[in-house]
Image 1 (cartoon, rainbow, N blue to C red):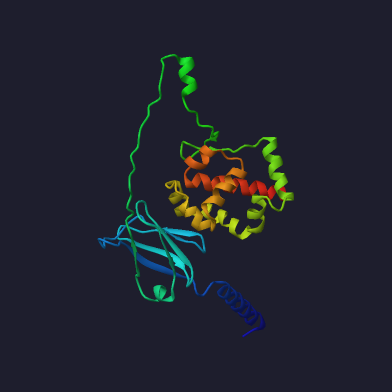
Image 2: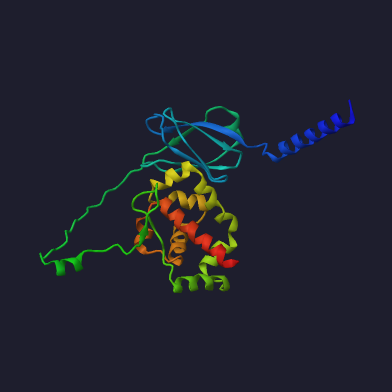
Length: 258
């Protein structure tokens, strides 16, 4: 064997070894089935999220899903009308084929709702003052829901407030964004995963966002308030719109640090 051939073989071997070591040997594809806990019927279109890697999957018409995972990863199951399920991945789940995960139907207690129509007088000048207005300014993005997104308050006072956050260690945004950069980097992964985006676009309860970002509901709403989003937007936007709002605020925060 000539020196050049040997040298080429050695280079290829070292490159292959490096790539093999760079991969996570513990991460495997977990294949499981989701069932209704009471009826034992398989459930399709259930969203499954790996909270550690920020990737999502969805069960097929036979209730089967596949997702990359390793031991100690946390899987989060979400389906409308069912109690969300959070499960730690074990070695047995990966070793034995087709583990089953069961979801429980939520019981809703409906309270009496009293509908009060607007009291109109017939005089436009008077009635127009009594019609409630949505204070949230919004803009539309092609391909996204027609309700659009709120742009937030970008006036001088709001910018001054954001700049002040950089020099005030007790400011909420500084404490959250500045001290938790790894947690905030999850935003980019969440926005890149179509399954997660589709799930968030259909939800309004903030539950999945709270699990993915690892913060509580109070902190989530405080972020938006400090980013000058209105009460109407905070209460009415879907979870995908909330994700985009937080992402935009975080990007502005990073720019102001430069």
